[in-house]
Length: 186
Image (cartoon, rainbow, N blue to C red; front, side):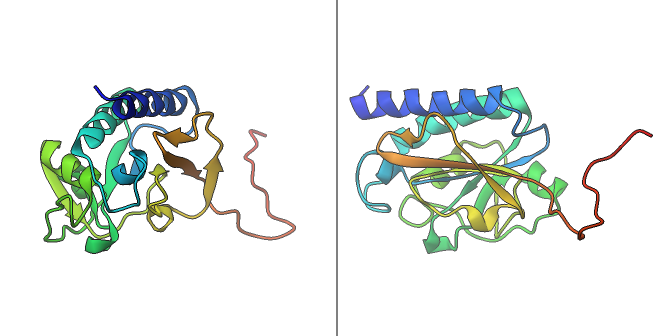
């Protein structure tokens, strides 16, 4: 295993541990992952995709899924309009419309391509409103998150050479001066 792969494994495992140890997600949440494996290996986004790096991340993120019950959603690159790979069961549960495309490393990215090949029954959908997620390498997952996104300040801020930015969401606060945002049992 190369140093880059070893470092990426340690970094993503630390991030997954933080998600599992925190109170950020619950079973059934949609968890979106945007990832540039090129950035992880120290190259410019979209230039040096690595399915070996994608495999490392996929394995760690499956552990997140198993231990929290979240549904993993992998964002593709802009060449297929940042469409998302997920299990068919998830798309049906959330009534998401499937689109006709198969991500490949040069049109979808190594991470989405790897996920598509290694999920049990993958489909691609055009967009989601996820409950939480992680953006590794500045892939712009914000369009896939519900309003209101709340950034998380993870201790582990990089995966390899790529910045890792995490967010969860919360319900919108609506109303005005008279609005109450907490329930009482009285």
